[in-house]
Length: 260
Image 1: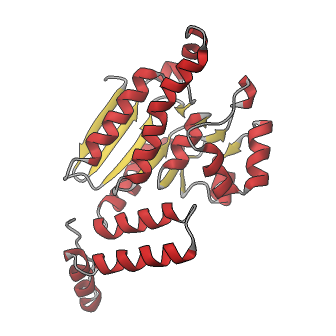
Image 2 (image 1 turned 135 degrees about the horizontal axis):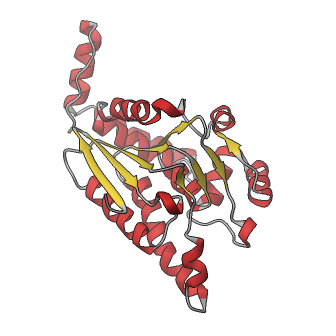
């Protein structure tokens, strides 16, 4: 198993970060490998949803501090190189049509928080938790954490988590709306995979437009969102998914979506 594992289960792709001894910390190798895996899944016509997870006790502890410390001066050069990959990962997750589900098998810290929150849905193990951790080592958040946490938790609460590095346990995160599901540790991967497979079986085109519109809602005006929604529903009305789901509704049966 390499630093990134890529497996396909029908229309679901499971991408696993595999640096358990380093708590899946993001160094240049993991960053470039994860970006490549996400792009492979994006351009694979047979994949309709992605589950992103980690091995060991952590989802991801964020940027690799050992790599940071061993980088030659000026260290700003290393940070700019690392964030090229990190920003590419975040933008790829957010801009691709396919839903990406974070399978938080354990702690998400630093850029691991950004990585989880950039995903469309989050399933967390009961023992999992968030911790911003940046200011603990004298750094400021990156990977979109500032915007993502502010959007989900509110600016005042987000600032408190950034300045004080408080844990957000999975149950509290669920109550705050940061995660969608919490599963017991013993059955986590089985249940997270089943959750992701449910998404992978859904109406692909409708999901893509819904995702685009939700992401635009961060910064667009209501007028812009209304127009995007208008375009999206018109496009979905021409799909086989719509025909199948409408027929299933009338016939009182479960629809079978087949993608584009």
